[in-house]
Length: 403
Image (cartoon, rainbow, N blue to C red; front, side):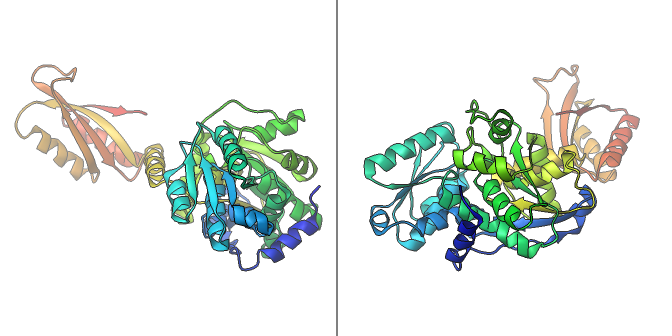
């Protein structure tokens, strides 16, 4: 089994190749959670995720023949991006196979670093099978995303940094997909401070590690969708499961809504962009009884590679949930000036009209009436109620649209 000495050697090997990311204290997240929160900002790595650690550590140990032939990798995005970047830096040809649904930012970034990117399969497992096939056909060294001692040792260097940056930590909360990050971090930390709790977090839709620890078998889960694409793994590794059994204290799951809310919180409060996997630790801390009140807790924000379109959808849904975005359906007389009078009333209530849809032909309103759908930006629930009350007092029939 991998040893702490392997992680120490990896750290020395990686000097100058990766960025030692900061781990600042967050006053606001501490107030929200009741714990003393520190955030490990792995989204600041050169390719936007922790995956560089493992990828670079493996590539730096290839023999000359392997270097000359090149490498292949399968990835949901971040691992492939890390392999592409460090392979280019080392002058190694790289072929990356990603699922067809891989985020555009990860595909285009990998290609920008000079890798050949093949989109194949509906999920990571299908992409993995294709990558293995490509590696065999072309004689390429295969860079596994998590189930390789060299990769896990590289990921474990994050744990060594935490021992220095947050020496009095009581717990570290880590996203879990295949288990390379949580296994390496847990080994590194437990070797020096066995009393520190290591808690893994998975998407509820794909909790392969939690199930494997509960049953003792590496079950392959059915395909499922999650916004945490970086941890969307259906089966954990042999190496990583063994490490988790020995060193990980608990694995919990979070819902898609909790992940979405955590992404928005980090964007608003920490001014930090994270992907779904990177938001999982905060989602768990805020929504699960982890017993960490008053304790020093490190949240590993594992990556920040998220499509702008996804951020937009998350922001809009978050605004609706917080009553800062609302849709009202209003029935009004179908006559000149009616829409202008309605807009004036909304403006007088200090709400901002973002969108108006004026429907006549397909509306169920009576002849001589029309239905108007208003999308409003407000300061919160109180202002929505003020707008509705003023419209009702002015004789309008108003219905608030719910998601």
